[in-house]
Image 1: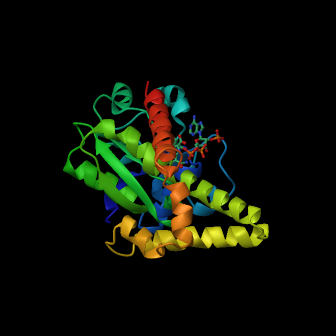
Image 2: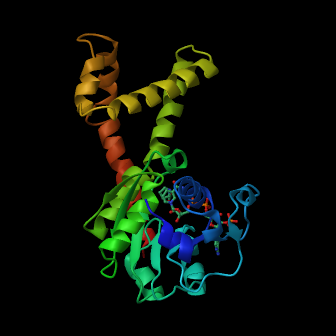
Length: 267
Ligand SMILES: NC(=O)C1=CN([C@@H]2O[C@H](COP(=O)(O)OP(=O)(O)OC[C@H]3O[C@@H](n4cnc5c(N)ncnc54)[C@H](OP(=O)(O)O)[C@@H]3O)[C@@H](O)[C@H]2O)C=CC1
Ligand SMILES: O=C(O)[C@@H]1CCC=N1
């Protein structure tokens, strides 16, 4: 991606925690010039100095992009303190907070809501984006390019889908990490040493994830490839796939709860 306009006019990043930091790292590895970046962050982590960006300094009058990566609960306090230029694209990664909230703060601005996830920290994230009416093709392309620096990007047509996206792929890495924890704990319960159980669980999830994205094979087919008739996997899956007590109803409830929370955060 050609970031020359952003490098010339500047990018302001508000909030440089886990997600803001991952984004910044990805941008700097993909052509954004450190001197073009101004970070606003009350407690900058020491490693931020190593990035070579400006922290809590004077803001450019008309930055190309203002990226908001603070907690949704901070938004009411943070938004009134921010300003944009006549040609600034606003991008927010906050869960729940609606485009209408940003439009109230920046009435003339093109605005893009984005929902990344933490594999962005290693360039393996997936981000969904959607813009307001003022975000035209050029602004959506710029937002997509910024998020593509940390992984794949999909575009939504309906902001209402953002709650489900947040619940699935935004929060999703946590579910997978918990799966690793649960598999390891079960291995320990079956007699494995904790280190060995964790190594086996970690590598199994990583390998299965890599296989799942290595081709077009349906995940159901990949599952069947593991499942010998009358074998061990079939015995395990009978528990895991139980329609009443297994993973499907549990995952349904998990994602419904996360989506409901996303909707709440938007109020
Ligand atoms: N973590 C995730 O998996 C994902 C998070 N998001 C969204 O990203 C956003 C950030 O989340 P995350 O990175 O996890 O949270 P973090 O708490 O790690 O980062 C938020 C950062 O914002 C800083 N901050 C607080 N107040 C201000 C302020 N007034 N001005 C500027 N910066 C401020 C915080 O500083 P301090 O800690 O000192 O208060 C912190 O460094 C959230 O809106 C979240 O919904 C989206 C997708 C995935
Ligand atoms: O837990 C949260 O609210 C944020 C949004 C998606 C992932 N983390």
